[in-house]
Length: 268
Image (tube, rainbow, N blue to C red; front, side, top):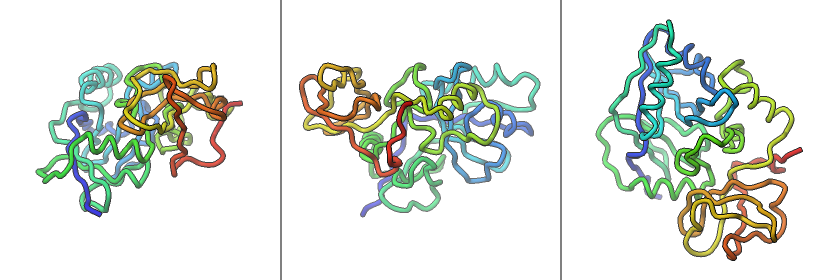
């Protein structure tokens, strides 16, 4: 199998430096940042106080700081928000112009393993690399693996991280203590009050339009997010997956990814 390498123009970097860099981020993000080692990659998010997703991101440990891998179109907004939170912390927050690369379909030397799911391969920051794929190839592979990407699939601030499967994809450390939005997130997990999740949807032909309703009979069972021919990500109701599902009159089926535990985490 030929290893694929692509640059992701849709992603950009922010560098957090200074002696307080790790504790500063640790108190804000869903992920443990204080223990991250050099060359280690973790997945997490910055939430709103009510617990909804504002920024999904990767966290990469460097010798004297931390890199945040974020949606390129949201980088300036995240820099602004982090600067607002900085107050008296001894940290620097600045854009980093290094490129973001992904490698998959084989072991890629020099790439940090994607913490969400090994089948996604790894990520690398900076350097001059020969590529043999483009971002669209990577997005198609991600959908095949069945892993949601909130920035690509559902660019809004209405999604809860557990709905985007962060709890199943190593995106939330429930043992680390406080972070912004922690109360709502922990309560949803503790009570099992999870009614919706992002899961891959399979069908024949081109993808339905973004926002198209998934129906179980006449009942709304979810909505389609981003997609490619034959597969899309959808936000679906867990209590309406049994039976015949359709989108715009076409039959569809929810696929259980290999990383999803059985039985499927469900609502109360």
